[in-house]
Amino acid sequence: SPAHLPEPEGGLKCLIPEGAVCRGELLGSGCFGVVHRGLWTLPNGKTVPVAVKSLRVGPEGPMGTELGDFLREVSVMMNLEHPHVLRLHGLVLGQPLQMVMELAPLGSLHARLTASAPTPPLPVSLLCLFLRQLAGAMAYLGSRGLVHRDLATRNLLLASPRTIKVADFGLVRPLGGTRGRYVMGGPRPIPYAWCAPESLRHGAFSSASDVWMFGVTLWEMFSRGEEPWAGVPPYLILQRLEDRARLPRPPVCSRALYSLALRCWAPHPADRPSFSHLEGLLQE
Ligand code: AMP
Image (cartoon, rainbow, N blue to C red; front, side, top):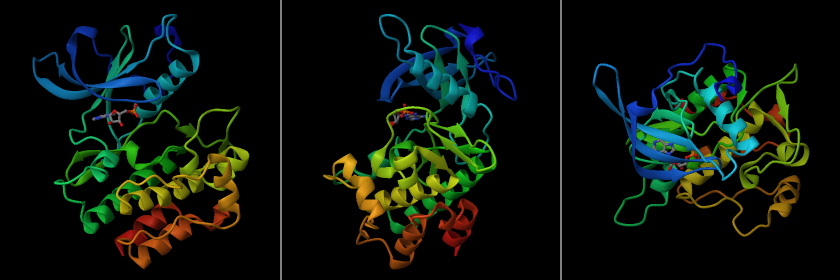
């Protein structure tokens, strides 16, 4: 029901009539919905290629947490505007609810990193460009008082061969209070191998825990999309991290970049660089 929509700061970006969007091929599926390629017909008759995320609906309607996450993602995205943040065009108040987003025609960075031959590996200079784009987008999110909480190459989309966009805002939360962190209210699935120790131990997330995840994302990029801590049971990851174990330097990652990742993995959140500092360091 529209009455359940959250009140966003800037009002709805665009309410799109159900008939104006037609869905095509399936692009992927996430925690609370499926994503299709689509075509959006504007009132002037022009068509725009889009991605359409539909809320998954069970036999008894949408699940409470999934609906909440879906609406939270909409209300976060409608207030964001950045060249490296995926754009939300609008919402279809139909059955099911649908988010109409900018299409990233080349899919996820993770899929590109793990593509097998004859697709060539991405050059290091391009990975460094992506890291700068990512640090810029994350500095922007932090400036809007948000933590992403799910930074990983699977959530970076390729809008063009040299442009990534941060996507998947289902786990985004506002940074509360003076301490600038968000503490989880109860047990929810979180991406263990990407998480900072304070997130695993206390459910605490902040811009500094996003910086930790940026370090893991950097590691994924230089490891051709390998899974971090593969083979280590989730309950042992925190113990390893607290014993100061860190993901190893991937062979194609320079020592300078790896030392940057190690700074992102400082045990104390306050010792990690900020995203704007990282942007400058990456520029150098
Ligand atoms: P999500 O539910 O946001 O995790 O999306 C699930 C999958 O759908 C992603 O891993 C992508 O492969 C694909 N996808 C999501 N959004 C888009 C988009 N805007 N353009 C192209 N593919 C997308």
